Amino acid sequence: MAGAVLRNRHDVLARLAGDPGKLDDPEHRDGVVATGLIGTPVAVPGIASLNQYRPLRRRLNEAFDLVVGDPAVDGAPSNYFEFPYDWRRANQVSALALKGFVDRELPKWRSTQLEELLDKEVLKNVRDNRPVHALLLLAEEDAEVLDLVLDAQEDPERTTDILRALASVASPHALTQAVTALEPHPLAALYKAVARVRAGDDRIALPPSDQRLMWIHEVTFLLPSLPQLARLIRGLATELD
Image 1 (tube, rainbow, N blue to C red):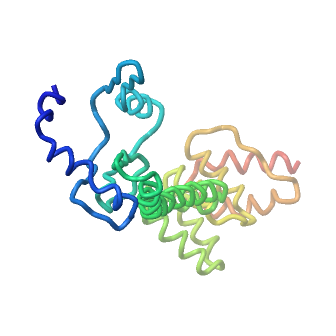
Image 2: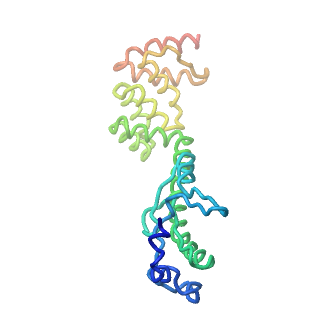
Image 3: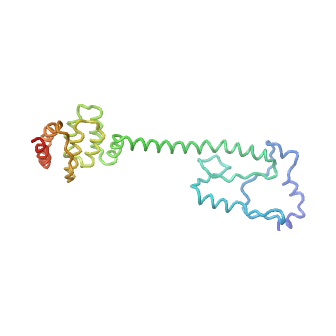
């Protein structure tokens, strides 16, 4: 069909063919621009049969998370481009154009991957850093508790008073996160035990014997607002007998 259309259009074919003496010049422009890959199967009887790019494109999309970009536009970072080339031109000319394209696009994509890796590393570090992780949880759960914890971090001498204030008003989970954010603190284990008692958890790990008087002393400050801690005092006193 194409042959029949072009059989008597030698002038068109000549313009498309271009000037062989100039096509090797990378700066030469003759108005013919490759705008996309060949989209239909091509067969040359007795020489070659090529189903072109559709199957390859499909397999790539199935195997990878592709972000499609337009090679003609200096746009957002992408990792998949269909780079058209002018088959009339020397391979060196196409390679030079491809190099310019890669030099433009690859740094953009690499920068997004670096940002993603950094985000993952930051997240990993946050998860590994229990006090920081606790602060982030408080930021989502209870801003008022978070403000008090930050006050305690700025003025460590207020930490015990702030924990006493939070013991009865903060939720058990928020109290646990507040204590974690303020660790290390000599009363951290006690206030986590308080949070468990308030949550109805009977599994209370008592401290070593040399710390039990300190626990009893601290719990006496909490009893007026948290009478359920009486059984914790009984457990501590029993262990002292």
